[in-house]
Image (cartoon, rainbow, N blue to C red; front, top):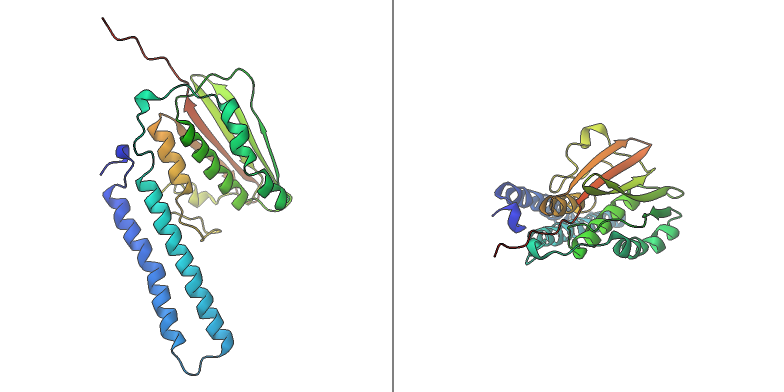
Length: 235
């Protein structure tokens, strides 16, 4: 299986199997402890909560892995038409405005007029924005700010996601795009959101970079290729 087909490479499948063993081991241990006749109600609730949490974790792993396996399946990039980010991004970002307001986080964006179209399917752009905003909201505390800035950079269009959240430890920066990797401050979820983003960007010829500092925030720069009209076939 290859990344070009949207599937896991062999090493990622092996890693998935290892990731799935961890919650199962924890669940099995908690079930064994629940069998103790001398278990106090407080301890019983603790183990039940542990089982529930690990079941949710395993569900996230299975759903996220299935999602990544099928990512972009059936999309013919040769047939992709130029996409206007000005038409797509306001709606994609607006989906998260309610959640941001509920958490007292200021979510703003700036998209200039006259942007050239990008060579990326609309569904992929929506998914990229969704994953990036979920990531920013997860690590930004109440009263924080998230800003999305769009600009032309040479032959690419840049989307920059800025937040003033908790930041990413220096030791984690090189690993955050790896499958199933979760930074130490967030051990929930499947650890696949940024993997999905990088996978989609790689497949359409884009890229992603991050600069971050603990207790200061993060800046993710995403580059999408500007659409170029294919040459006319020779007669």
